[in-house]
Image 1: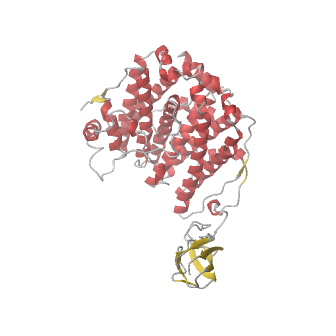
Image 2: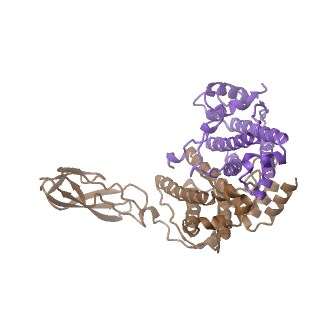
Image 3: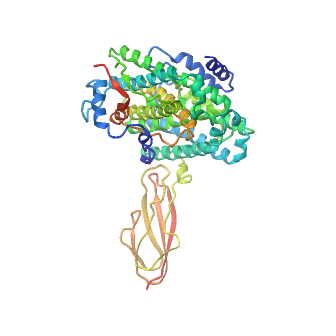
Length: 218
Length: 320
């Protein structure tokens, strides 16, 4: 496969992504336990990867749970984001965001029950810092989070040993990509900017997520 | 909640097997665990990695042909007058053609990447077939595109378990999510839910093959490499080259092999007085010993099955 297709393009758009990498890895290690980041060269096992995915899904679920609690259907319809939309697309905006919220919460529940079915302890949710100052910052962060989620799943898929868990992860990854495409289109970007979606490592993703983490349980 | 309900109703009324299947999956997909139920039910024997890549290539050929044929049929005005334009608004509808062109380019890039990966594993990539796509207008074209893209997502999600090489898994995932982006976009502009389920539905090779069969008219016999123009092919360069110096390099490296395995090269001087120090390499140096004039060389390539092909290079020496 051409390496040129695997070009990271989204991380630079992530607010606060730069400069926090080292802190992030430390926070990440705290979030995920010693297992995930136990040194270069030791591959994470499937439980580590499930907990990594759960960490991201917790963040996404909390993001939509809080954001949609804060903003009403009417406020979202009045956002600058919604103005170029036709009436139907504008009316559907809140419903589609609510549907995305329900997906992220379903991903959390499913990952938790899968981890428990393996006798593992699901990682807990953190407290988060999200910028909900305007609907537009909410929607722009949503777009960044979804595109980051795609890169995270694509980066982790090759590390999953169980074929059945690979399938499961793929069926979540493609849903995150559907969310990302929708939010890209709303903001005037191409639904699919690359022929091959970029991938990111766990360390890279945790660095991107770090600015959103206020405090995580021990 | 009314909005969600109306969207759901709209979607269930949507035509097409694939979307209905996906919606059905949605209700069942909030399962107790992540482990999918559908897999392996119909695949007694797991396909090899090469078989999975060939399967993916077959789908990508179909998708690429669909867009390469279809996208040029529509002009910018067709999009501004389309049914989706007032629904989506100018911000989105003005970008639909750009998105379709990008999607077409992605499918073409997927074909090339899969062909290269299959050749890299020492196999002959499956050739494109002759297809039939039934649509009479832009709306029908987009509906069919949505069906193909949602099918692609289910195919990749179903096949990824059979890939074991990490690099191929990553590449497969990076294609799958792009197909999902396409599907989301096409669902949106055809008034279906872009993301109908919390979990996309994986489908087996057999299910996908059955679903795509109606689009296929005929396929070439297996074993011919489409990238090689139907077989082993010698390509000798330069053609009508010129040089002012007496030492030049001939280039046969654009030659292609029917089975993807390495070729052997044999160069011969057919016109002029020249000396090839290594006549059995892809890019030999040649010393032009006869001064001014035209020199011709013949390249013969031989593949692992003994199949051969010839091509000629020519150079005008403008020096003395």
